[in-house]
Length: 169
Ligand SMILES: [Cu+2]
Image 1 (cartoon, rainbow, N blue to C red):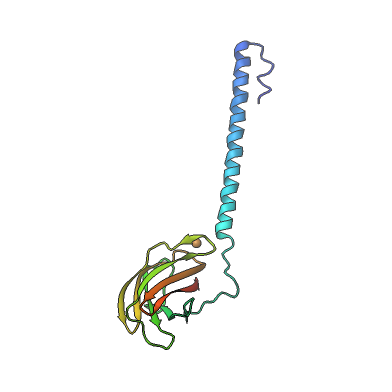
Image 2: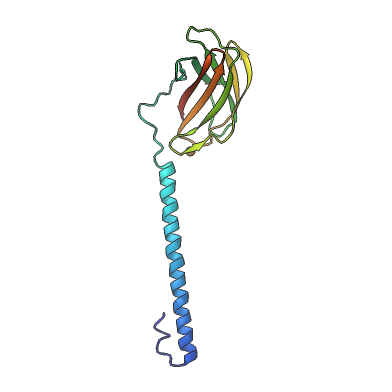
């Protein structure tokens, strides 16, 4: 396309030819830049979401000792099950290692997807102690499939500790 303009002797058209050449170069530059941006975005998406297979030996138990063995902690969805994308509640049960319920804990909830480097889409809160060391955790939502972690920071007169639960969906 550029060669069509080269034989033209008129200064006016020669000038036009140069202008067209610059425009073409600019278009190709935009095309190359768009391609590079697209490739980077695709690579980023693959890094974020391509390796979502959790470790094969992932501990999926819903009942365990807290990290420093201060508490025995168990979790379950309040309704028994839950669905992806649904806002729902969990019940967290906190006991001392001897089985005594911990009635007076303050508990912070955190979590996310370790493979995707993002947190929870909501900010779940413990809203009530419902007796015998059981606490209602409201506002839980898992907005995508894969490996999720729920982390509970528990503090009480018996001590402070964290319990981390894995789940896959
Ligand atoms: Cu994710």
